Amino acid sequence: MSGGNPTVKARGVSDSLTVERPTDVRRVGAPVQALIWTGGLLLLLLSIAVAVTIGPARISVPDVWSAVASHLGFGASELSPIRDGIIWNLRMPRTLLAAVCGAGLAVCGTVMQSLLRNPLADPFVLGVSSGASTGAVVVVVLGVGGGAVSLSAGAFVGAICSFALVLLLSHTLGSTTDRVVLSGVAAMQLFSALTSFVVMTSADAEQTRGVLFWLLGSLSGVGWGEVALCTAVLALCLVICLAHARTLDAFAFGQDAAAALGVNVARTRIVLLCTTALLTAALVSSAGAIGFVGLVLPHAARALTGSGHRRLLPVTALAGAVFLVWVDTLARTVLDPQEVPVGVVTALIGVPAFVAVLYRTRSTS
Image (cartoon, rainbow, N blue to C red; front, side, top):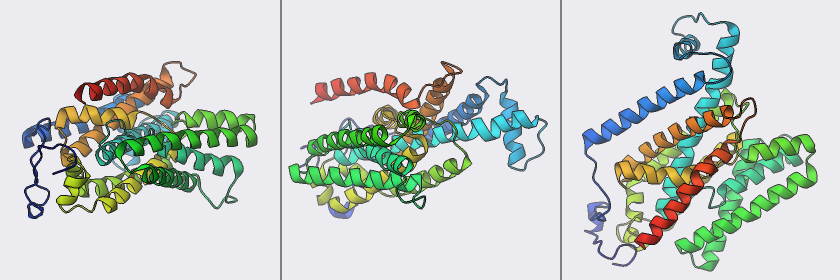
């Protein structure tokens, strides 16, 4: 059978995607899987609680629990209005949005790497983030839509335009996974240039400073509205991706093997890539373009769970959430009172990991 690993043998379409797994895919037992998920959830909750306490104002973990319980209707808080406001209106929505963005970007990277069978694929590398940034900047700076078009809608349109360009270029060039990645790089450069052009020609000094900071990734000033929007989109997209988990497993053996197992390759690609475009657009509209999260975290999660996507996707989401919570905490405190863009910190961490992935793929090719 052609496509992917030549030693893989399909056992028939009637087996519903039952195939012999590659030798590098490890099976993770249910107890270990439950331990990983439970530990990940506890680590995420603890990370959020501790991250909210870090900052100029002296706040403890019990203060955080007290404020959250009070706002959720579980008793009254004895905190002062100022301290309660710092926790509930400033730090908590920012920390929660960091968790949601980290989870969403990591999930997008996992899906793209599986669909394209390329370990270097993620929303940033494939130009989806750049397209979303361009759409958002066009709405903010040029005022397209006269106020009727929201920032999120502009980001989504930009992401879809970038995604459509990548599909068009890759189809014209041969539709191989390498061509898709190269088309994504071209789209990333194009939309980054368009964004810079719009900012430099149409924005005033204050807009330019704010937009450029946002384009590097910023979670400052976010509110509960952004948290609710991104959480809802993440939940929807994660459900869609989990529903296609076994299909993503089939893609690990190549398009021909997936088609032989009854997978509608073209339809699945469109559905899942549109899903990742939607999720990326929502995240970029709220937090800006944050790179390398979708590139690095899927590889770390695979080391824990193997490549089965029903296990991999939730663990990747948890890992991405914990990772970006601490990256954002570092970004807002390392040079206090000055804030470092989140995307700068993820790039400083992600570039060495990107090089490591390159060396790994070269040694295994």
